[in-house]
Length: 280
Image 1: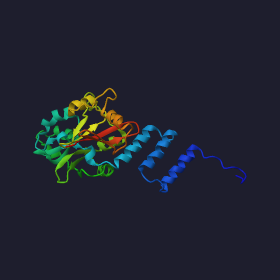
Image 2: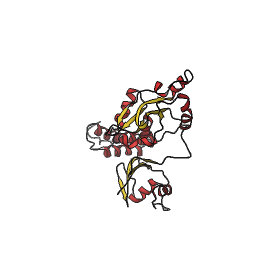
Image 3: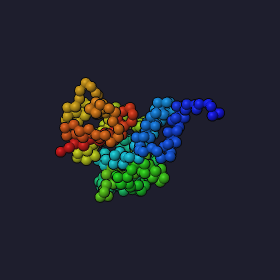
Image 4: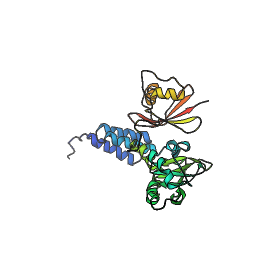
């Protein structure tokens, strides 16, 4: 190009690529700056919506901890270590899970994991075996562990389920690799999922609950004895957006009377998961 020729304007694509270069050279200050670049890329059709949602999910996984997504102890489907293999088939057929925590007496004492493939391999050979004879060691993780670290560990050790313990070493719940992946790609439904009944509410303790944002607001009112429903929204997520008057990001909260709603997972289109704390 000669010195007399004016410089050509940068194409939109090159402009976006330059922003990525800025990202790599450390000029991006925080996650919001990164998301702004990615959303601009989506608007320029350099990145599709599904890919953006998954990227946002990956970023959120690095912020969430095991306690945010675990199945609480009271909701775990478990088998007793001294149960005969044949006796647990009704439970296996009804629940349709591929792995079960094995308990010794009560749910606070998980001593192993039963894999259904192990059950099927042994039950026909020796009907006298007990669950404890074929169970595998349980992988144990603290409830404070970050999800991105957990995902790496599960992939490395080949385990698909881990038992979550609290600060006192007591079983707090369970978490699977599928639970973590669902934070990235959305809910993974299989042939065993119940399409009629949805578990919208998971109780974590006396005052805290995890709420699926798609929970109908009238069902929320019935469950918590509240009166939040109006004609302006149909779901808990819709209620929160209506109150805040914008699409909230992860970590934003809303307090209504004695109810504190905190957004745990959301993308650019809707809220996915909410933590509810009932204040004294």
